[in-house]
Image (cartoon, rainbow, N blue to C red; front, side, top):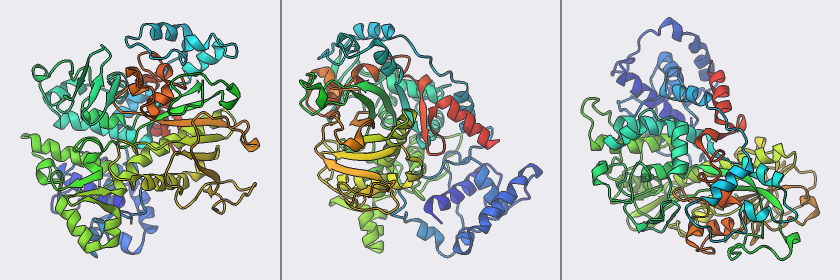
Length: 613
């Protein structure tokens, strides 16, 4: 049985005890009549999981029924007797299992169910005229450093039509991975129970769509460096001061930063999962030094394609963002910071330590880490006791710092799956195949170790193989400017996910996905005859607290891939929530899932709720 299944049973039993549905001694009661129809389902489940799987915990059929239909509340802790040292075995996650855990059953009446009902009522924004976008662009308070990527400039070109510009603008939308949608819901519930007074006031009555809109609209214009240099929409600049946003009373905040109009670091961590996608025209090949200069030879450039902003792990600032889970350090991973065993808080006497513990447990649950995010000493013991397997998972960065490869793969896997499902969707709508241009996300100045690139590529291969059955409209994945040259063991020209994976052998009838490695520029024309008619889907490395382009708005046009993309495509306008206001909004949120593909949040909620009835 996989660790996340063991964790599901443990958390469920703990919650039952906490809610006095199950006595704390673990003894069962007779199930109410309206619960009995679920028993047959669970008996079928058990019939397919014999041997050790049946004896993981001594909880009877009633408890297992509840584990499958009761949504876990904020974490609790009770002692559960285990069989065959199962709990000890559970301390080690399977190194091959880098998926996020399955979504917990959404129980009618639960917070998640109510949020889905609210999502079902969201009206998808209708298309809007290009003139409105042009007007908002003209009034955008920050000066565009180049105009060649703006709709107003492109409309002057003889080969660009107003219809195509309007179509590209209306094709934009934000996307969340299905699993992350529930993370956002759990975040809101966590903050309403354990957040600061400022957070409780802000999040009171907020829907998940409202949260997405805030994450899009309240970010800085530019946000760079470990010292958090920023440019705000009102033109103010500064360094630092973001660390305590949300935890301080309003009168203690230091202008120009205030929680009402700026994102807290906890919100930035959520925002890093948020993707924006649209079709776009391309004005040049998009290399790092393009600086917004139109290509001299238009035939060298793909005329249009899809651009997807994807965000990786930011490990340049210790103690914040993904550092909290990916890194295990002597100073961070201590009980005082909320790591280690999770104890159920007293409902009437919540304190700062309870908030820290529940924040860690929110992320442990999201990543499927059982039984909790580890203490530093636990990792030392695990590396000593489990040898190579534990050392492969926890890579030593320094004498008192370890890098958790499993959590890193799960984190980037959520972004990779979103990119792949979006490429599949766009190509299916266009009735063609997608040629996906992949850049490293979080592998440059944000990285802490050179080994991350290999782990990222392995995670990408895991995602391709896991989603193979639903990626029928993706033909190629092209990794650009990677030092490593293997994706899950498959090299340049090889096939992955085909009937027989190979490493460079051409098989015209193979239905696999072709892997490429080169120094390819993002928008270079697809010249091979077999690539004619394919849809180019380009990813670029974005930031969770900046508008598309980031340094672009400071005039630093060639400092990274983010401004380079803004200098060669239309993301500075089309992905900008202040300019493409109707489409880059919470109301236009789309959800990416393997079951139904990419669809508007209201349609996703409708299908999900129907599946629960």
